[in-house]
Amino acid sequence: MNYGFVIDNTRCIGCHACSTACKSENEVPLGVDRTWVKYVEHGAYPDVTRTFQVTRCNHCENPPCVRICPVTAMYQRDDGIVEFDKDVCIGCKACMQACPYDAIHIDPDTHTAAKCHFCAHRIDVGLEPACAVVCPTEAIVAGDLDDPMSKIAKLVATSRVSVRKPEQGTAPKVLYIDGDAVALHPTVFAAKPQQLMFADVVTEQGTAANAAPPKRAISVAASGATIRVPAAQGVPGGSPVGGTRAEQMIQLAYNAQHEVPWHWPVPAYLVTKGIGAGIFGFLALGWGLGWFGFDQAAIVWGGLLAILATLATTGLLVMDLERPERFLSILLRPQWRSWLTRGAFLLVGFSMISGLWWAGEAAASLTDGAFVLPSPARAVLGWLTLPLAIGAAIYTAFLFAQAEGRDLWQSPLLPTHLLVQAAMMGTGALLGLSAVVELQPDLVAAARLGFGVSLVVDLFVISFGELGVPHASELAARAAHEIRHGRHARRFWWGAIVLGHVVPLALLLVPAGAVGPALAPILGLLAAVSATAGLYAYEYVFVMAPQELPNS
View 1: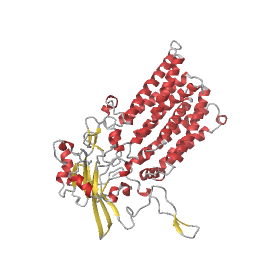
View 2: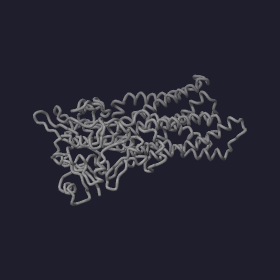
View 3: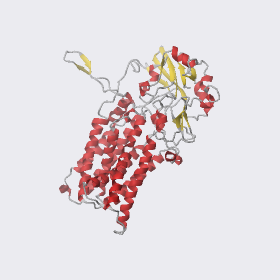
View 4: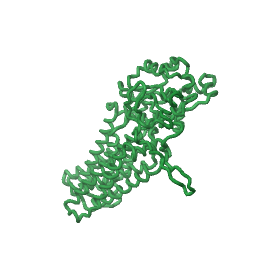
């Protein structure tokens, strides 16, 4: 068995009977949709046509939402139907990030993920999905794609069918006969709609109205011919398919509106995780390799700061769940292919080993020598902490890579970038700590050098790696364009670049002799605070910009 849908656009009349039947059959709350009809209008009066596209979960052969779900709340049945379990879902919204089609939403009543589930309860008793039954023109055909005698298999064999975003490698099983290329391609309407039929515009998705590339510049070639200057890769200014060569030649008349799943807690968690992992990682590596002498004040106070940052990380992650009371499900019923699950166990392991190390050093400090952590135990705990700190720092890169609906996050540089950011936060935190706690000079000097180097490397990775290299994917290119030149440009340039890199580097370059020994540590503290604020600004635009692009 391999269930799928065929949508015959030559028959669809845009009546929304499928949408209302779905709502009635599955008790879908107001404000969200499991299936909807997208309206696209072509031409200018009197030469106007309107096309309809029934849009829903594709029940992909290779569903990324199943792979990323940490608790198997989203799963694929043996018959190919992608189903969900609202009684298990923790509301992490990772499946929404993984879906390249914006087919999943959070149910406002249950606060769990929901979507079209092929009316699995009807399939199990031999009935068709409600949408297929109610369609007055039989434009929706559901059935077994593997059965050559089924109606759906015969339609696929004899018709020219298309799917949404085949390049994603998900093998969608909602196939369209006479599919409209404009409706199938969501970024034709990348800008936030100004108005829609039947609905007010409330969506958070869509680029800024003025974010579209300017009209192509013209130059003169050596031959004297007038030519267009090449545009930025992946960010077209228009096309014959989806342009505006005549007024309202192509316009979006109606579409379901989608929320942005992740907001400020996720960028904040990336910062606090970097601080916690960076401090312990730097101290473990530095002492293990003999870069500087052991300093009990550094591990006690720096370790306390790292533990507080890790606790804040956990708090932010739990707070962002729609069902926070279920957060232990990640540990109690893990789905091991999900990097949310793997990351949770990395954080637990890191917290336990680093916490044990810190507790031993803190006990030695508080007992005035009555208890001494043996040097071999310190070395073992340090070397055990280091790989866990690295894992805690970089696992989010692999989680983001599983979020297949956000192309900008699919960066091979991201693990290295997160490691650099952790080094930047860890060394910066210790440098700032030296302004209020007396630390050994060789450790402070190493932290200062590490902080400066990581700032330069991070700036290089951002400028010439993450955002500087042209992106092959249109969605990634548009997200990068929004960061550099669109609605997030001010936060990126003034926050991430100036406040996060230029100001800290300038403060580090101030000679200690010019300000005196009393003020030099204060400058280090200011540099660390500035870099932390700048990192949050960068993480915010990096997390938000890809989510604001439509996938449906």
